[in-house]
Length: 273
Length: 296
Image 1 (cartoon, helix red, strand yellow):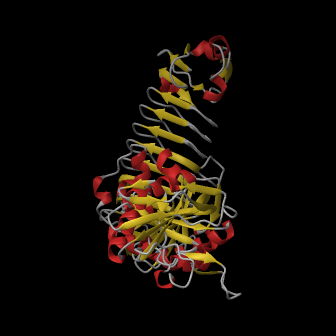
Image 2 (cartoon, rainbow over the protein chains, first blue to last red):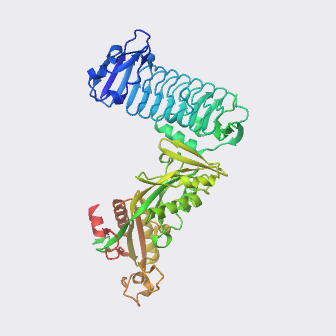
Image 3 (tube, one colour):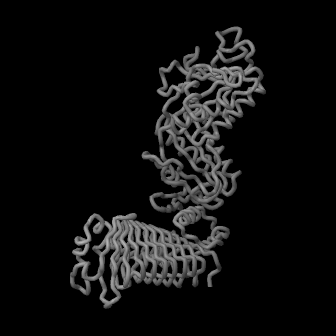
């Protein structure tokens, strides 16, 4: 079944779409889907009041969001199964606390993409905002599983508090990347911003370049790491192509943060600036 | 039945269910991967004396290994899951871990898994670290040329062991050539191994002995030097016998490998091909040579 929600380009009200998931939509009639509740500016309304619903029984199960999608907040929150496609930009909190399934964003994503992600895969073709894969406010742990793939750049505090899972950014990543990281893997094909890995206990941060290494991080020479090869093979299988030089160059390895457990590692392919 | 003048005896090989595990061993070069695989599969020829049987399934190109490096697949068979787990731990820890640049992965997706990397990690003495990608957890154990990466759990499946062919020939060197070709044919079948040195056993055994503490002994009916003293199975012109033992991931795989080996072994100088069994009382798989040739 294919369900397409077409949002008109009128008004700038934020639509909280957190209840609209593949598992709540598939198996329902068009009329039932239109009656599902959503929140617009603090008021509960029917889904049919904010978008046009189209259903088709042909093709694989897929929930598509079209039109003015950048006003849609918390798309795919707590999603467990299925596929959602945002055919444009995604708003705040997309994929928050998601457990499974796939969200594909054809444009950019706002802040808090994959916040406290537990499982599944989020793929954003463009840039993403701050706190991607980070912890929810007041919580200690960031993402605990799953995969976030970013086609462009990521903002500040991406992967903050990360405990498990994988984030790959094809572009640059902002300041405080993987701050307080407990475990997991963060790969940045571009440049990492300042204070990358601050307070990290364990986990791996891999970068093409880095804007300065934090004091205290110790050089551990060149690292021929087989685990990274496994990771690159796995990324290749889901059509993520890391920089070609990563497969032939050996990165330099730094360990830290010594103020915490110090079991974390930052692998850098190029000399940092 | 005769193939190319070689008599195929109307008998069967008696095979047994065995627990099996498949290791994928990788290294920086094909030579290093082979070296580690051969070490891991060493001294595992017969379940009777070695408690497990093992062999190289074949080389794996980089695009078929988890880390994109050249690899080798090794099959390890044993009669109980506990014994197999013990040998996995021993062989990965003592043969693969010390091999230069090596890594070791599970190559069998089944329902039953045992922790091997999860136990080997303690070699890291607190410096070990884990990586989890999807459902797979890998352990990184620091070693002097970098890190030994080993998968946490390895699958244990039910395979079939004890498929065999006994090849009887006129002249030892010619017969050896035929047996070696048969082993190559076995190795061309995915999921099958010939566990003996070079895949060939020159000492077919029988269960028991005249000595009470010996579990298996030479099968005198196939020994050319004893033909005048025992009820020999050898015709007057037969001067040597080689056995090819075949283990596989399933009965079908063993049958396929036996067929390939049978057809390849029918060469000039080979008189007769038969198979070893215990009258059908011990093993549930009765692999009839004629049926194998007709069926497949």
